[in-house]
Amino acid sequence: MTEPPRRTRAEQRRDTEARILSAARETFAELGYERTTIRAVAAAAGVRPGLVMHYFGSKEELFASAAHLPADELPPGDPAQALLSALRRRLEGAPVASLAVLRSMFTHDEAAEGFREAGREWLGSIERAIPAGQPELRAALIAAIMTGVVVDRYLLKHSALADAPADDVLELLRPCIESLAGAR
Amino acid sequence: MTEPPRRTRAEQRRDTEARILSAARETFAELGYERTTIRAVAAAAGVRPGLVMHYFGSKEELFASAAHLPADELPPGDPAQALLSALRRRLEGAPVASLAVLRSMFTHDEAAEGFREAGREWLGSIERAIPAGQPELRAALIAAIMTGVVVDRYLLKHSALADAPADDVLELLRPCIESLAGAR
DNA sequence: GTCTATAGGAGGATAGAC
DNA sequence: GTCTATCCTCCTATAGAC
Image (cartoon, rainbow over all chains, first blue to last red; front, side, top):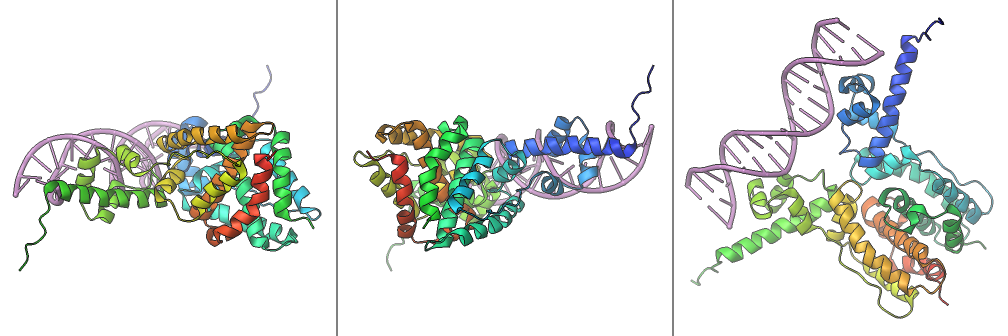
């Protein structure tokens, strides 16, 4: 008979916390902030609602811990090429933590703020890479297009975009991005 | 002394109902479905919550009466040109009833259904107008771009798109739309 | 036609047992 | 470390007075 694996309380806690976070991410991504309940997250994670509150303090803090947009900056080099690579990353797998923010940002202030904040750097780095006139508006259009495409593909799922191969999307969008990035 | 204008009960009712609908549209557009309360709509319309329920029966029905996407079809002729005209319409004034749907469609099923339904015709008419290969995906991308731009301009308001002149936006987007519409 | 009053339920948060 | 029990607030919806 082998010893059963002993887990310290700290390990146990990390494990449970991770399960809760994962459940929270998925629920927020699917239902948005208002409609996800602590109760539902707890059920999905296999724990009691009180424990979720005990770990995270409030629904707000749970959301803050579970949902975030990764910081992103455009690398130097040909801007159109870099933008298409960034878009490829976003098209190749559903980024659940990001979807939680995207799903919630229209109705929840904290999510909107997170989106705005991540967007500032992102927009700035695109603007600086654009040699043509009206860089702010061009950058804004590029960002709006990318958000529109991701949102349609993962959240709305009402068009051919939902399951089109990333390569096809990128190929069709290339002239679009190139004209906006204004290669000189 | 002139007679004070007599208003029949029917007139009175139409008037009050219109005020409630207008208040509902604005509140739904600003806060989305879940966060707008019957109470808030009633307060904005200057009536009691009970009256709103009495007229519309439920919050769902109030939303259905207040929020809708106008049916839209692409007119025959040069598709790129028609698409740019459609985009111009959407850029020249905030369509409050539409914004209520757009704001709510990520978290409220009825709004999502309304968007999908209006999108079906719209996507179909774009597909049929596109002579190039992969018309479904091209149409989906065009629609996603237009939604992304409108959402960014009116709902997120975090970029230069929020107050750019419609003409500038259209000019920058023209090559984009033309390449996707695949002029032959 | 419009209002008051209240039922009834859902969900976030808290306190304390084990 | 996890669970039970409960409080409190807010909301939709209903019933009926004026």
